[in-house]
Structure formats: structure tokens, C-alpha cells
Image (cartoon, rainbow, N blue to C red; front, side, top):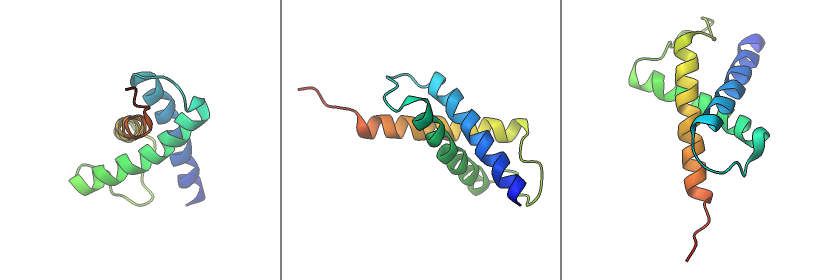
Length: 92
């Protein structure tokens, strides 16, 4: 169980780093903030994938595979986009 949690944290950090490169915008969160958003995004992406029926949904199964990486990157990109949109400064 602990190794699964550690694997998801590492996968989320990687997904956050990739999402930070894919999502346009300024890097006002820095690399650490983007990685933290990636970890949150990996969790969100995994939850949405399972809710929509195409997640792995297995307990104790493979954590790091191509499907989980893609889902984590998509989830991380969505979270980074939402946070960028929510925290952008309005210029008038």
C-alpha cells in the first residue's frame, strides 16, 4: 500500500512537470507548485477516469503504465489550467 502511494506521488510529480511544459502561461507557481498541482491533477484524473469507466479501477494493480501516465498528465493539465484561470490577474 505504501509503495503504491509513493508511486502515485512520483507519477503525479512527473505529470505536473509535463503539464507545466504543455500548458501555456507564465510559471508563477514555479516548478514545485506545478509538481504539487500535478500530484493533485493525477488524483483528479484517476478519479475521473474511474468515474467515466476507463480507469484501471484495480486495487494493487500496476500503478505506472501508459494509461495511468496519460490520465495523470491530462488531469494535471486540467488542474493547471483551472488554477491559471482562477488566479490570473485582470488588467483593466
